[in-house]
Structure formats: structure tokens, C-alpha cells
Length: 538
Image 1 (cartoon, rainbow, N blue to C red):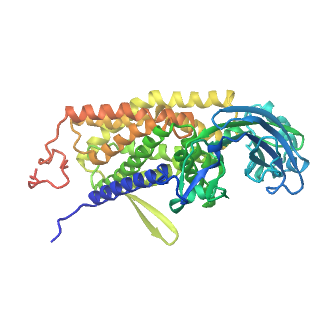
Image 2 (image 1 turned 120 degrees about the vertical axis):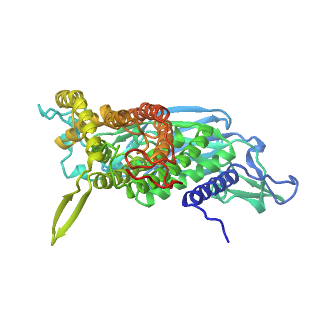
Image 3 (image 1 turned 180 degrees about the horizontal axis):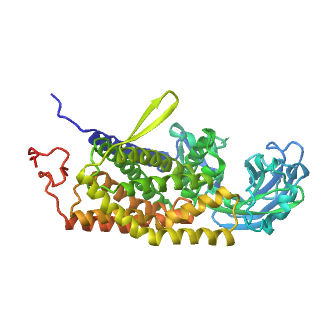
């Protein structure tokens, strides 16, 4: 009754619906319907339309409600909503803040000539100037034992137990925004996100809303944090101001809520910082492009995993496949995963690397025909035998790895010795992982060459999982875009470009050795998953 639909078609269909729904939601956030009858009582008029004289004042306090006192940090006397500025001020730290306490900033927008507490039409927001994070462990030279001179004083003051306890860090930047456009809101269609920041008062028959003040939390990055210790009495604070459009304000509110939700679900400050970097360090239009790129990256990742697993699930022969390349890829993905874990990289990068490692381990089991037999609590590993065609492939594979070893091993060992002498690490484990991953990143593409060599000797590419390969190929170019957007170690960023070269070589071999999809090749393997004709016998 209904036509047969493949799982891939369903996934792509749901994906397109998701993208269209997201576009509609984003349009609803950026676009706000204005009041259609400006003179009616259902409209809420802007306070800024009267062009009042305003001041911007910033205070610090130990409590968000200013109980216990407050101190004036900066006052912008001639404040113009449309004029951008940046001020660098020094903030005195109270004794409680220096002893691992918290400090708040109270930002007021009020009438000129009055204090914030005297102005009935003032608006204000409270934000933290401090946050808690684990201190970065000191790095030492593993040979000489010398510490980093810049962290010598901190190490004297901190014990090993204190390194595991979060300490107060200073946010060196405070970004303030005010909506400058005189927008007429419809009382019956007031957006819920703006409602939180809106203060309204009655003036005759008119409803007037006070200036929409916004403190940008997304601009607070981990790289700008400064650790606070008991000897620090004063720290610099950059106060920057710029006007903001209503659509961008609503978008920023939703993004801040999303980052806060991630932290509530267990994401660390550093994980949330990676998300912030995507929004803060990227142009808004480029950000929209990034969203679509990320969505397609997720789709291609899923389809590549699906087809790769499907290919290897039904793989019974390793004819034409480099088993050593599979083994080295498994080793490489595990090393990269441990390195990213040691560097405390964002979960955006860490989770896919972990899933990829598990899949590669499973592929090694299939490639070497490993069977696990449990005898009580003791596992026994049994390896399957190779047939004549597989032994022929294994000879080419071994020959290719022999040539590579002459170049690969000396370079990896030399790089590890150089790093041990001239680079400082947190521990011996960190040095081992960094040395391994530098070898993988620098020469990892060489592990793909045995497969190219096997293809060349057999003059065939019919044995490769081309569906999964093409999805991965699309993702290599998408990874090139992400390499400039998501914060990651430099070596991991450079490694994103190595697959592009190998991908082009694979395409050249695909053109050089065309495949008849309906024919079973001389190794008993058909390129087409469902060949139309019957396989002929030898």
C-alpha cells in the first residue's frame, strides 16, 4: 500500500524538517511585530523617544542586593545611547573576595544629576565579576624539574589539595548594551524574552517602557579570566558599551539561556566557553552559515557512521582492504581521544572522538576476525585464518608498512626526545600522550597510504565502502570550516586539513580504476550492495 522507504530517506526527511523548523523559530526570534496603531492604548512607547539626559553608573558589591555596602567604580557623565565607548578602570577587591569570595557588579542607567537611588525611572542589572574554576596545574621540565617561573609564586601558595578545589577568578571584561531603536511594542504581543528586561510605568493614558538594558555574559571568556589570590588588592576591568538592535538583543538572550541550560546539565565553564566563542567571535551572518554547516556535519556524521557500520557488519573477507591501516587508525583515534581528554577539550570535539574510537575498535575485531571465548572470567581470543586472496592483500599491506616505517619511526622518536628536552608538561603521562598524538597528527595521513598502495597493486577500488567514504569526505571539508570556529589544540586544527589531500588521491584512484557495479570482481567482491546478476563461479 505504501512505497518502501529506506532509513536514510527518513533521516534526511526529518533533518530537512528540523532545519525548516529551526529557521522558522529563528525568524520568530529576530523579527518582532510592531504595534500597528501607534496612538492606541495598546501600544507601549519607548522612554528614549523623549531624549532624556542619562548617566551610566557601575558599582561593586559583595551581595547582589547591595546589602553590606557598595562602591562606585565608574560613572559615564555624558552618556549617549548611540555612542560606543570603552573604559579601563581599576577595581579594589574587598577582603572577602580575596579569600575566595564573590564580587558583583551593579550597572545602573539613570537620569543625569541624580543618584540611581533617587531616580524612580532608573533601570539596573546585576552580574558577577568573579567565577569559580579549577586552577591550571603547573607545567615543569620533566628532565631538570624546573617550574614555570611565572607560576612559581602561585605554587608556593597552593598545596596539591588546593589544586583540586575551585578558586575565584576575575572576569576582566564587562560589556553593556542598550536597545537604541524607538520600537513600539504591542501590549497583546509582547515577546516573553524581552518582558524580563522591561520596566513599564503609566504616563496619563500611555504606557512607557524604560530603556532595555542588557549585560552581555557571552563576552566573558575563559581566556580573559585572572586567578585571584590573597595578595591581589586591585584588578583591571574593561567596561565597554555599544547600542544593540532589538532583534539581536532577543537572539542574545536566547543564546545566554541556552549556555546557562548547558551548565545546569553538567557542562563545565570551559565547555560553555567553547559555545560562547562560536557566538562572540563570529559575525552574525557567518553564525547563521555556521548553524547550517553544523547541521549538515551532524547529518553526514550520522550517515557515515551508519554506512560504515553497515559495511563492516556484512564484511566477511579482507580482500583488497589494508588490515594494518585499520589497526593504525584504531590506535590513532584512541590516542587522539586520550589527548583531547588530557587537554580538557570541549565536549563538542571530545564526544565524537570517543564514539569514533569505539567504532574503530569494533572494526579491528572484524578485520582480524577476532572471536572472544569466555571461560569463566578469563577471555580467550581466537583469530581467524586468511584465504589465498587475503594473503595476497596482506603481502602488499606489509610491504607498504615496511617502507613507511623507515620514515615514520625515526621522526616520531626524534620529535618525542626534542619535546622532552625543550617543552614543559604537567606529568610524564602528559608527555607520552602529547608525543604520541604529535606523531599521529603530523604523520597520521601516512597510515592511510597502505590502502592507497593496495589499491594501486590490485588496480581496483571495488572493495572500499564508498558510501561511508563519500559522507566522510564531505565532512573533511566541513571540518576545515570548524577548524577556524571551535577552539581546539593547534595540532588538532592542522590535522583537519590532512584528509583533504588523501581524499583527492582516493578520487583519482576511483576515476583511474572504474567499477562495473553489476559485475563481481576477481576477488569475489561486488561494488554494488545488491547486484542485479548472479555471481559467476571460478
